[in-house]
Image (cartoon, rainbow, N blue to C red; front, side, top):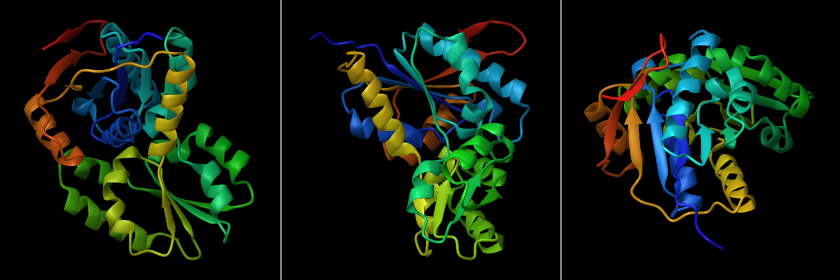
Amino acid sequence: MGTDNRPIGILDSGFGGLSIFLAVRSQMPTEPILYFGDSKFAPYGKKDPSFIKERVEKIINFLIGQEAKLIVVACNTATVTGIDYYRQNFPSVPIVGVVPVLKTAGKMTKSNKIAILETTTTARSSYQTNLINKFAANCKVVSVACDDLVVKLENGDLEVAGKALENHLQKGNLKDVDVLVLGCTHFVFLRKFTQNSSWRVLDSGEAVARQVKRIIENNKIAGFGRESIFFTSGDEKAFAKIAGFLIKSEIKNCQRVGITNDSDKIHLS
């Protein structure tokens, strides 16, 4: 069997998808990866769905232009906003989304009360409503909108974001909750601020990485890679610094990419 050394493409509004990057890297350490953080327009949490879909569509187009063999939309908000739209518009490449792990949470809860930390757009989406009806219909599901945490994380303020998370947890209607779902990939980096709690904390990272691995193995497109490359629509030096801090590894190859919404123009800046 030959190898397919084309990269996996992972995209997010900013840094949150790096939690998915780490999960994929852990399960498939030899695969080349391209990561795109749309930091100029982060966070996506309260933006109009049409804007989010247009941004993601252009970023997918860019990653395919960089020969990505598979795309991971590593953002819950972007996934629930338009995963079917992306797959319809890019049928030639497998596209994996990220959604709150309500199926696992529904099976795990003993109290039948689940809490989801998420963005406003994810909480209001019909996609998530359908997930709840399918996998947690017998549960009380409490949504805790934490858009402010994303902003703080995008600024690299991990400790500040952690304190804000603790405040959200204290103010939320979380009595009898025994499963806490991290419904935004950014929040995985704040897991330590939930460790002294009485609930199980779940995120999507391992499940997404397993799905990526299944697709690669089933399609026989496993590869052996080069150094990961990072792209951002924001300041590349600032991005590399914060991203390196979050993944605990120096980022040596980070490039700024200009992707505009008023035309189809995409260029390396």
